[in-house]
Length: 214
Image (cartoon, rainbow, N blue to C red; front, side, top):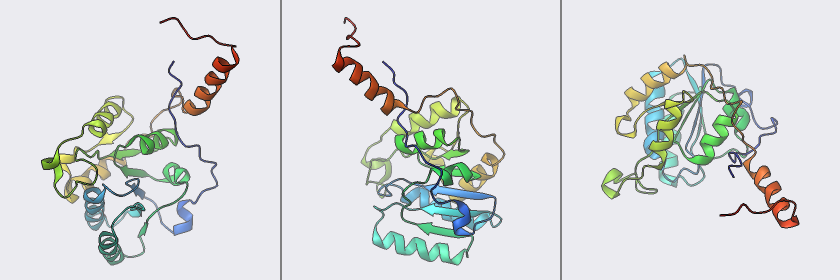
C-alpha cells in the first residue's frame, strides 16, 4: 500500500527571513547535513558574488568541516549583510515557504519538505558518493539524486542544474531563470505517510484489517 510521502510537518512558528533582516529576492541555500555539499556551497557563494541584488540565508549543515566553515564565513562576510550563514536551523519549513527560491541538493528528506512547503526550488543533485566530493565521480557515481531531480523537473515541480554543469556562472543564470517560475502545485500529493502507515499497522495488529493474499 502506498501510504504517501514522509515529510516533516512545520508548525509555522519557526524562524522566518525577517529574523535575519534579509530583503527580497531571498534565497535559501541548504545542503542537509553538510557532509557532502561543499561543491554546491562554493558555487552558491560564487553565484551570489554575481547576483548583487539577491540576499541569501545559507545553511551549511552541522557536519561541515571546521576549515571549510571558516573559509565560507570569510567569503560570506565579504558579501556584506545580505548573506547570512548558519550551520543548522531546527525547523526550516517556514524559511522554505518564504524563500523566493530554494537552492538545494536532491536528497529525499529535503525534497519532501520542499514539496510540502510548495517551495520554488532549484535542485542541484550530487552524483558523487557521500564524503567523496573532493574526488568527484572518480570515486564512483550515485544516481539516486539525479534521478529524483530529473523526475521532479519532468513533472514541472522543480528547476534543475546537472551536477556536471555546476559552476558559479551557471548557477547564477539558473537562479535568475528559476525566480520566474511558478510555485509548484502539490495539493494532490500526500505528505502524511508516517501517520497513514501507523494507522494501517494499528488496523493490522488489531485484526480490523487482514493482509492481502499474496
